[in-house]
Image (tube, rainbow, N blue to C red; front, side):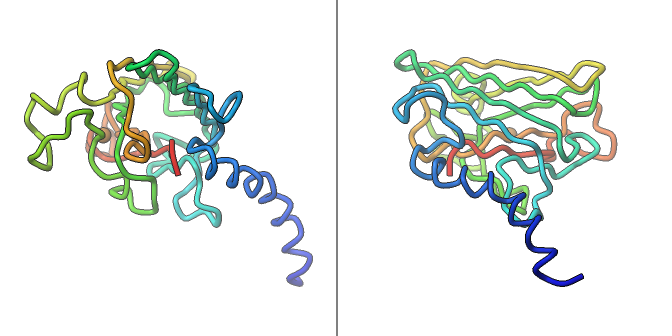
Length: 195
Ligand SMILES: [Cu+2]
């Protein structure tokens, strides 16, 4: 097949993504709803392999749990001062499964470890953080996302703080239970919240 014939449909397929990227870079959120100053940001994405040609917003590292093409919508509501309410909705995931989902500091990358440690409001001076005074569901943002028999689910967490800009860059879905071939703490998927 000649290169021009192959390149044209690819370029057309990439165009919507190319249009999304500048908006994300300027706003700090992948797909802000409303004005740029809106305290509510929305990320909508389909999971792709980390090796995709265009680095995906939502990466799956375990397509038995988070199949490529499965969809997520994440709404981060900072409209109440000093409070963050984050809601994650998914479709197309492994059915009857519970994913521990956490706000992490780093961004998503080809290496699942690139999302770094958990974001903490008060940062534990000892890393990795295991001290329950810091590693808890009030100082970190954690969800338990349970899917139904159709692989759909939604979960919400509310915390009495707002993340420091640029320091809470991803939402990580751990493999959870049942574990299957994975360890419960393995990173099954990652969604970028900030560039
Ligand atoms: Cu985590």
